[in-house]
Length: 283
Image (cartoon, rainbow, N blue to C red; front, side, top):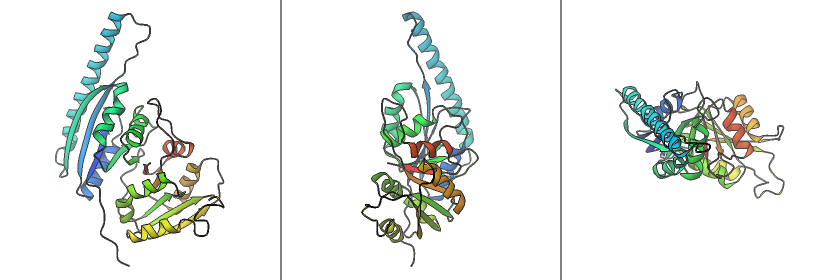
């Protein structure tokens, strides 16, 4: 059966916050934008963190001014670095730069990123303290799918094997839909179901409806039903990805956003902390 007409991302976004951060997210975003003829929106955002405890008013005002100045200096360095980095790239791209107070970051990103098809970022919990906040803002506030790239990894390539965590839930379905442009490029998708409940609606054919959905979108798939041999589902998905040689994992994001903290469910958090290959999440 021939493949259906491929889908693609038309607007890809990435965020730079720090001159020291690894460039895997930016490099992967450029690579995908090039392959899919997408426009790349690059947001250069530095954050002015303000602790207001134990300062008398004048000192606090001075500190805020100094922190803001530092954040603006950092942003200007990033802008100059980015202009240099993008020189000679043939993709269509644009840059928007801002310095925001810490609490305003989520609202700023929610407004800007909601018009993106995909956000590409470095995987959090590595060396960038802002990365988890960025991922949380993208997933929960902007409600955008996020492709996270671990250090030393590149964007998933066309072809190859993709592993998809599947539990018949809304988040997993949102992630599958969000990943379709990448799934359509894959040779095969591994639909991975861990310890399905015996009373599940699809107990006679677990993953069958998802396999049919992917087939109609031109992606061949296999269903693997695995026992829950480890406490965290994320650990099982990672082990399976290694076994089958998957170049990317697709997963729903479980958890909720609360008081501007990154509050992820256990499966999501273990994947975010340990993934050794690109992981696409949505909710």
